[in-house]
Image 1 (spheres, helix red, strand yellow):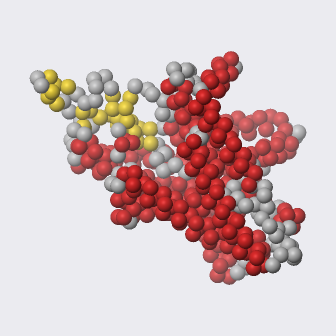
Image 2 (spheres, one colour):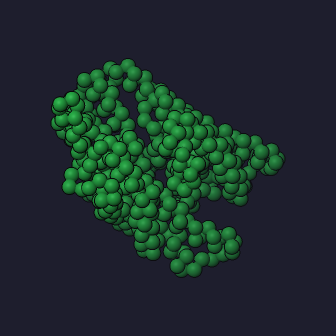
Image 3 (tube, rainbow, N blue to C red):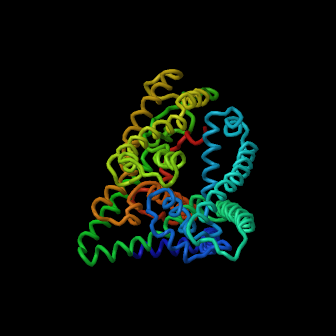
Length: 455
């Protein structure tokens, strides 16, 4: 405990770090405040009654979790940062398929990144307008939610502008946190939205389980701790491919590049695709019911199989969901990890993998290792995706179960690790001890170099 308070004191003593943390907290408070400012013309009591039946892990419940409850509150930040995330994913996918975006991402440097940022912002505005119209349609379809004292035309026109402004303002907050705060601003805004629902879910589980069986509640917390621990291990896990630099003559002396004693490696991440496979798989799982409602109308009764695909606790849903996550993990990893690019990079740097010939053999070797490493990563990601349904089957309430896996857990773990890494860097630069004595936060110096980031 003494070490913990000493670390906090060291963090607070670094002026730049202290100012960045306070700036980040201030902007996060502004973001959370916007989650409770209701759009004009909304009957909040009728809206609360209409949103009571929403599940924690259906599509609308998922969006509401990412916005910290702003979606169900019909707040100015009801769409949150999600349109920007959607635009970023679209631009990233275009970077794999469209040569123009490939050039912007790889060969045009800082100017290319600025163009991509500008395109992403413009696409965000377009997506926000579309999603804002869909959101207002959903809101006005609820009984008695729209105030009878406001004109519908005025309601639609003004609130689409407000929703779009709220999303753009949230995007600006995220960028300012990245520039002048600490951590990745967009990711932190999503994390804050997810965490906002945690206290209510935790205390609901505490009151329902602890009174009946304290040991059951303690067991739940232990399982949650072990799940988070396993997620951290997998998120940080890498397969290091050792490399060597060929000797070259400098005068009459042969030396290695880089300096002698420094080991170099190519890091192949156990989970290179992050949370994207789960997001894509969830989008696919939402399609069957959405298509049925579109074709037959919202009043149609689904068949048994279709109903099971809409039930996140059903066996059919979880089997298909697990397989989709595994498949999308392989697809997304294949898009991100380019063995040919690694091989060409090693050749340009006059480096090689010991025992492997440069060129085609190096490319095949990296491709084989990537396939082998992705298998356990994809299986774990699939298990994490369906784990909320597993713990819910043992009696955990739905709102608390979502923190046992899925996108919520992966985002929380990823953002927290990134924050710890940045704080660790500040401490080590000022010659303080790091956050932990044994082990290391990912990114902490360990006497090794990585060449993967430079490609």
